[in-house]
Image (cartoon, rainbow, N blue to C red; front, top):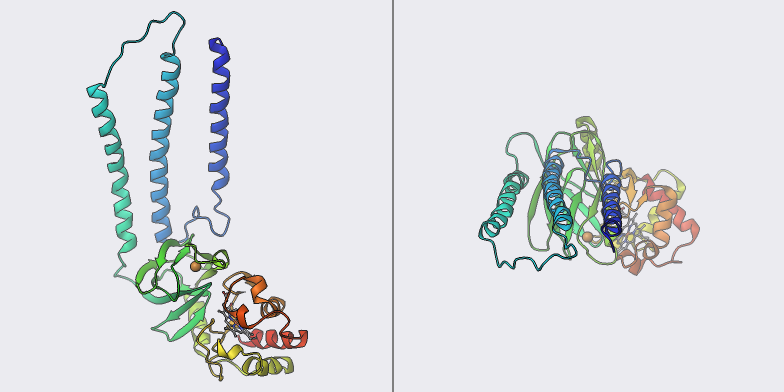
Length: 347
Ligand SMILES: [Cu+2]
């Protein structure tokens, strides 16, 4: 093959790799999707994102320099017909020293912001208002306790905007990981170990969370929401959550309550404060009606979805504990309607 003939496949390969890289970078940057890290909505996520870009550009410069040297060498030092065997060398002291020192310098440059961000993320801020939240992971849902407020809820963590939330991470069973991509993270939740992280949301909004450590078959369905409230909304939410459950006001809801407390066996696993339901196994349902989603963020909280969930928890989240007792076909559609009405009324 002549020189031209060889140039073509190389140019094609470089072009292909270039387009591929551009495609990954351009479409991989998806700030508008709910679990993208490319839109930081709080100081921790912002520090982590800045660090990402710092390392990304350092790596990009290294990539370009190495590729340019590589392509240059490919053409400039190519063997031409009639060339004698080149001089055989074994090691070149300045070069050897150079390419040992250069990576060390690059790593040192990257280490400065890395260590600084690690330090800031791992050190709890002392000044400012702080709110303590206990997050307890279960296969495959989240319990949120607010010890200083006396609140217990599940799958939706409310925090006021502009306030440092100090989050204590625990697990009831296997290792899980706490991650709210737009607010920061992630940190493992390990049985018997007390990890602590802090987060802060700048603006009110709903941010998606997700378990980030494989924890069994329901892992991908172990989601949650972090709801950053205005100060007023947070106080309203707090006041509501402190209340015991209200009494049912419709016939359907009253019938649902009776099934819940009786033959449904729901009360053995779930707590509804202010009633006889004191089960410690599943999520606290005292104010389930005030949540946006059900079953760890997998469905919107609507009457129909509640009925669907109670009709077949195993079908919606295979392997979950509720499905071992509440099996498909256990309830008539009237009973499902009653149960969903009751739960929906627990605002
Ligand atoms: Cu998990």
